[in-house]
Amino acid sequence: MPLKNLFYILLFTTLCFGCDDTPIFSEIPHITFKSFTNVENGALLTIEFKDGDGDIGVKLDGNGIPKGSDKNLQLTYYRKADGVYRDIYSFISPSDTNYIVPHYQVPDVTPLGQNQVLQGFITVNIVNPWIDPKAISGDTIKYNIVLFDRTGNNSNTASTGDIIID
Image (cartoon, rainbow, N blue to C red):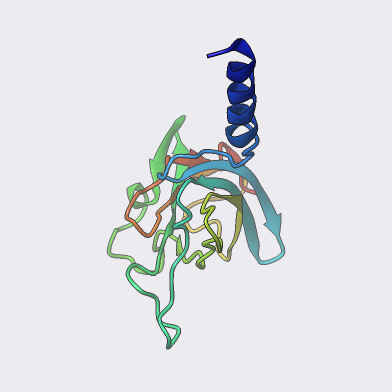
C-alpha cells in the first residue's frame, strides 16, 4: 500500500472518530458536593452528577404515579459529638418518625436521542436541615448524599463536609 494511501486512511479515521466531543462516563452515577446554603425556611443542597447511560430520575406512568422506587436521592444526617460524626439514630430512637432520614425524588431527566450521557446539577430544598432535636447553635453537622439510578446502581457517597449550625 503506498504511503500516500495510508496517510489518507489515517486522516479519514481521525476525522471520523476524533471529532466526537461526547464525554464518556460510567453507567454508575457519580456525584460531587457543590454547595449548602441556608435559606429562610431551610437550606439548599446542590450536587453535580454524571451518568453514562442517562437513567437518572423517576419515570412516571400515564397517571403521574412513579414507576419503581420513587425516592432516588438519599441524605444521611450526621452530628459531630466529641470529635466524631454520628448518624441521627445515635441521638434519637429509630422508631421516632418525626426525624426520618430525608429522601428526595429526582424527576426523569433522560435526554432524547442517541446520546444518553447526562451531566448536570441537582438542588434540593431541605425544609428542616437541623433534624436533630438536640442540635444547638454552634454544633457541627454534615450530610452524606447518594443518588440511585433506575437500574438500581447507587452513586458514590458525597459529603457536605462540616456545616456549623447558626
